[in-house]
Length: 525
Image (cartoon, rainbow, N blue to C red; front, top):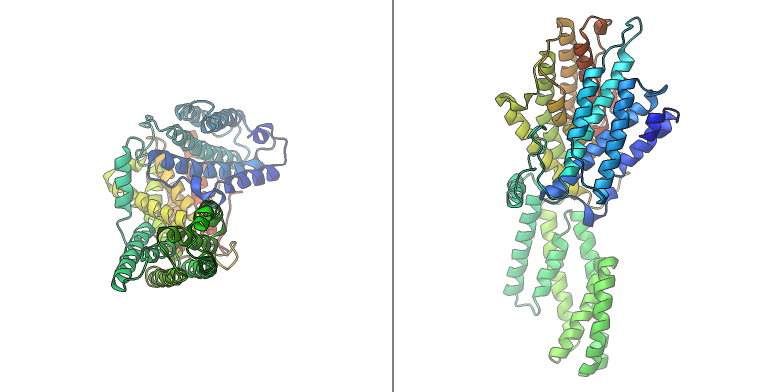
């Protein structure tokens, strides 16, 4: 932000730093134990703040090369205000001060929207200036979302009545209500959470049935290994866990057999070894993986049982049988029940999200062109918004699980960019609220005609992208009609360019989401 305000730094280097900072917010760059994936309001707010911050940084990266020489006075004023707000939000997340709330940024946006407009001298082309202002305005709207989300991370219910209810629907809900929404959202076979629950329950029931029917000694080991393997959400990860656990158990059983034969009935030896073995097993086992964990755990249980009753090396043999039985059960369930893990559902979820948001693009632009306010309160769009929000949450759950699974064998820079697909959905849902700012004058026929043509191009590209074609998606938004900006009143001019910038941003998200081969012809910048 400081580089943008000075306007003297290399805009391309600043843009790359901003994009790099946004990439650091990916779930894959966050430790699994601190990822905001819970059902409570705080985790939902942190996740929403992360997505909005990425959009904010990406939009600032677009602006960075364009703000030299220094920006016009309204833009410079808004940039300074956003820089101060960013510093305050960062301090709030660190816990050094209370969250300031979103109202201050909203007031800055209102002043900016009133002050911006076409230059007094229309002999030049006002389009570049208006595009920069619209992009900055979109970035400021993302900053409002960040500020409101950060204010909700402290666990207190903050008023968000000035913001669309669809955006912060969880703000006033109780924790039991949020958990019920999480459960209800995933009561569908297309949910990876539902699939994991069914696979785990079926596998453990089968393990219990087999252990009881065969009267296996220490049958709880069957359930333990079943749980270990069922916790893997792909067939490949399950097979890897089975191999590691079996190899570790064989080595551990061999070491346990040697110990039991050597020490015999000397319980003092087992008592002296138990605590050190437990310390090593429970500290090194989770770090070393299934092989180390199962091998060391075999030694621990053998040493513990040897103090309770006389045992022989056959205890290690029973351990091997139980481990192999549990591993086979887990492997069978992993192969038969949703073996692809989150990858298949990520594709389906992203496709459903794209199809659900496509109609909202058309409705949003139509209402902007006719001079009417945001469509969030209309009955004919409420159902579409709810459907899109549900699809977004299911796709986000699939993405959260995908980040916990082993990466594919092919290079990570090929194939769809799922985060870009989620960002596309977020941008559409946010645009339905902020793009039609207020009641205003309708656009003239040629502006409406351009808006419909550009919208249909983006909507059709969205529906094509839902199939994730291997050769990507090409989006061709038409340029504005020549001279149209000089024939419109000032408020409509800015509003028209807002729509243009939004549609081009959606087109860029689509091209990135589908993967290599996707292009946007007729880019703004």
